[in-house]
Image (cartoon, rainbow, N blue to C red; front, side):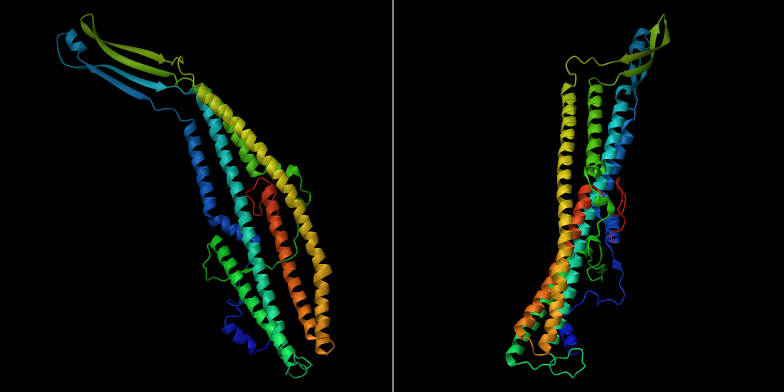
Length: 430
């Protein structure tokens, strides 16, 4: 680009490269971005808190009720021995015996803990998908900004008709005033393209930095957009991949919890039996005498057999099973569609690169030479210029769409890029 034009454009705000703010910036990969987000995301902290909450319920599930102590004081002995006053006539200790329900409560609580852990893995999948979407959106915005700058650089070259032979920006032919005006329009359009690309890049960068809790003014640099490389695990995708999906695993644990809930409801048809040990004092045979005893209290479920709670628990099992079947159907359908779409996008991008982008590049190169030599007119040059750069932009969009669809496939199939997933991890996708 013209050495005079570049500083003017930079000072005027036309050119602001995402790499110009720092000489050396660490490149963010998708893996490192996801790892950073998982460490600081409030969604994951909420999921961790839910696991802790369910563990607290598990700890409480097999806890025995506290015993109760009762003390009876009256004046019965004082009346019997004519001494008057009040005496402690009975001390009792009662303990409820929760044998019938503790095992079922613990089984239910353990299933709830497993459900919370599975839901945490699912939350991580959702977060990974969100990060991947923002990452690839920012990749495209950065690539389009760089492409817009190249377009502006090429448009600026058309203005340099007075350079010496051998200059990089040398044009051999003379330009008429009309041709100069047309090329100036191309230049101004290229400047507008840079402005638009810069705005979209800044917006995408702000959204991405917010997810990573990075300062807005910080500089970041991503790995560039490349062709989609599908891991072998996805290439062999089938419905069996869904068996370990955390969302389905959570529903399976929910079914176990609901079935244990039926046993808990049945065990609560009557209150826990209560064992009471007591020691009393009475006035017998002309003197005070101590007595001891044991008592077992059992509720008789005549009027309330807790049938409503039992039926509710049975309905919960049915509901959980139906929810599992529904999600299994939806995930299977979505995985099939996403996988087909991913393959289509990969083929389309490759076809576009070989059949459109490469020929457009070659035509643009030959057109520039023909125009410089005076063999082609200005309209042919502008058409070749627009065709080439538009093809470049469309190719970048196809690459981004492929990566976004790959992220959708990972989310639907239950694979995690950074681990903490019951399914096989891909590792870094290059």
